[in-house]
Image 1 (cartoon, rainbow, N blue to C red):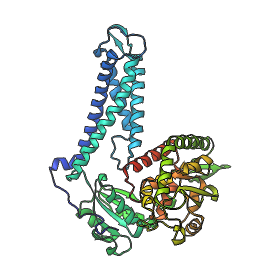
Image 2: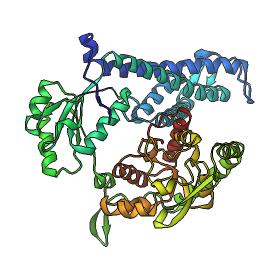
Image 3: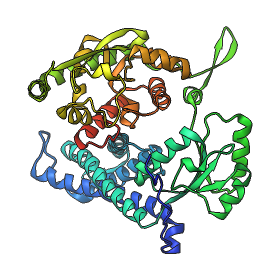
Image 4: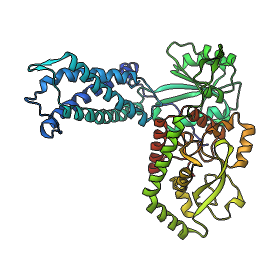
Amino acid sequence: MQDTLVQPMNVKVGLPFMQRHYHTIVTLSLLIADAASIALAFWLAFQLRLRIPLPERAAANLRFSDFVPLLILQIVITIVAFFFGRMYHRRRTRIGSDETATIFSGASIGILVSIAVASLTLKTSSGAFDYSRGMVVYAWLLSIVLVLLMRGLQTRFQRFLQARGYGRTRAVIIGGAEPLLAVLQRIVQNPRLGYDVIGVVHFNGGQTQAYPGVRALGSIDTLSDIVARDQVDEVIIAVPEASDEDMLRIISKCDRSTISIKVYPDVFQIMAGQMSIGELGGLPLLNVRDINLRGWKLSLKRAMDVMGSAALLIALSPFLLFTAFLIKLDSPGGVFFAQRRMGMDGKVFHIIKFRTMRTDAEKLGTWTTKDDPRKTRLGGFLRRKNIDELPQLVNVLMGDMSLVGPRPEQPAYVEQFRQSIPRYMERHREKAGLTGWAQVNGMRGDTSIEERTKYDLWYVENWSVWLDIQIILRTVLQMVTGRDENAY
């Protein structure tokens, strides 16, 4: 762990008005920017329709003024769609690809509904409302692109303001040991979240020396005073083992009406996060969320795996051959490395990877560390960029693995983890993956197996096609940018 995990708080006071109304100003600026982007897209679409008409019936005497009512409808309906997509809510954990999907769907709803309403209610100077199909297509595509670009600029501007002390959240973290450290590290690794950690409150005591650079603020009993004294905006409770009574006691101490409270869940809370009422022969029962990947969804995921792995193997074959050639030049031994791993339903298979270590590596240990001396010169680079994992596309094509899923472990480690980590074997209800939700969130390498398990269980319970696409896109981005510091 670094010597200074959290830097001392340095909040610039700035203008009182800006500090008090920062989030209102940001939300209004987003609304104005979205409306301006849609209007600009509409005007550009009109100009493109005049110069580059799509194959359609020519619209005589096109005048922009005739389309202004349609433009107003589109702006209003699109912004309403964005609102229900929580695009104007403060959301720290929004993923870029998730926001892109919301913009795509909101723009699509806006253009379709506005045309339907206009066709039924609007009239032009020449009679019934008649719109250009080409202009609609242009407006739809341009609105998506311009809203994305404007929101990208907005994000950069917000980070610029946060770097100068505006709109930051003063947070206190309650917890101890590993969960508290996990929350602290995530905040430090993501400064764009806009948190200033005031300090920590150790649950049932604790060693303050374990968190150098972080102030220990006191105990749970003094939490009310801490919240009021330090003007805390948010309390993060990282105590998975806390009882219901403990949680109520902590929350009752956070008595400021404007304070936000977040809870770091344990494994059961993750699995029981969405419960519904069912019945068994008339007897009411609470259903813990059932596994999501069944029936036609299972067939769809397998089809995606087959088509995706086959296409990637063909497209990447020159690169794979070149990598194999470099491995042979770099060190003596084979190009590939095969190892027994445990997959779906406890089935053992041989995973295929590019060799990144000396041929006698397994004699010296099986767990990889950051500065592992067993790595070859080329091996370190291949591991950092995840290139060594690409031969597993063959495992995906053969059906032993999926493109996305929990990463497989060696059988010996599985036996060890199942004894110490609750519900660890639940992650084996699905096929092991080439990449996964835990991996794209930094849970790889020499990191906590218990934390990885929480991410894997969340993925198993919340699977969707779009979630798989997000994970694949984030994996590619991490490979290109090299942002995964735990890839070693």
